[in-house]
Length: 440
Ligand SMILES: Cc1ncc(COP(=O)(O)O)c(C=O)c1O
Image (cartoon, rainbow, N blue to C red; front, side, top):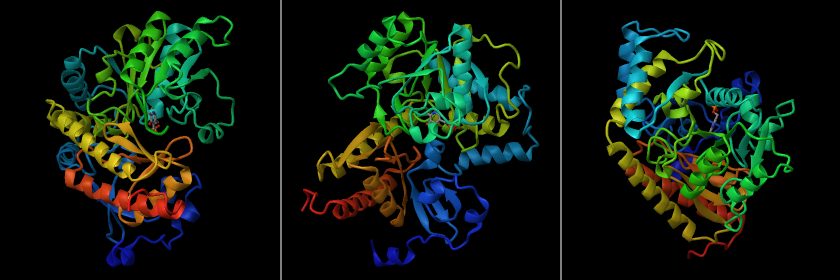
């Protein structure tokens, strides 16, 4: 750290407004104890004007950066012209534009025929709708979810979530879900699809015939575990053979994060139901969507509802984001190039240490470093923050340092941020287990 940076390093704010008036439930605020004030592109600024590179991006909600000028312009134009803000689920021009743009630029070119259900505004709402629909269609309660999966913290979604920290707060038994081991959960030795098939086919396994399987192709909160193409294809076959619906939860890995709009595209699978949220609005505006094959649309009017379903401001920015970034493959190609850069830099960092201390993992622009412990990962993130990089952990023991920058982050900013990360790793490892570095 330079002398200048030491002098300007962030200090916990003296104000106790948040301590006094905000619940203990706050979490990210504990990792980044400053008061943020402004944000632009790949940067956040605290109230003292200190600049931070953002490698958290609203947990994947800001794929196109903070205050993206193109989207901001469209939103301001819409608001200034007295465009509808709230309309329940009534038709609006903004919704019509979003639906037709989403169909024209995303679904149709990928050969996907889905209808859209606008759910409540956050990811967990989209997951609840998906699970409820699947259960109603199949007339079965059980859902297969996977170890380390994260699907939200409302009761239905949380039952499908693995993390005991979240599950422990439910206050009720979490039921209706059987957890199976995710791809490579036991390393390379055990094929977890064969294991699952055995459990499903054995009438005495204790697993009730599931209505559906819900899965992330890359487990964002679960520690950047990646499902292989072969595994996803085999999973789809398991579903087809046993009359189970395949739900892909693309809330974090979707919207371009892995280098294609949907994260499941490279696997060539066709899920029955897909959930999207986070970066779908493109501007950080709450917005969630459950899409599914038209034949599955067994909802009766208003059977699943909510006051804030489909946010007109989000329709405007989402449609603008699709038009701006998804008209052709050039943005996605850029994302893939930056993903390669990210992987390369993380491998360079990892090459200095034993795999058990630090090992790169992930896919697309959701890659990171699996650390020896949550303590080490937390120390790396704390040191990175002091040097001006906002970066968080994920994983069952919070042991994975997760790089989740806006996809629009320029290459040179990625390189700068990864340089900061490299320094933070070096310092943290030196104080964690002195002498562990093989680097001179
Ligand atoms: C894959 C996945 N599904 C669902 C959710 C829940 O979304 P939300 O926090 O918006 O309810 C998340 C949040 O991180 C997620 O990563």
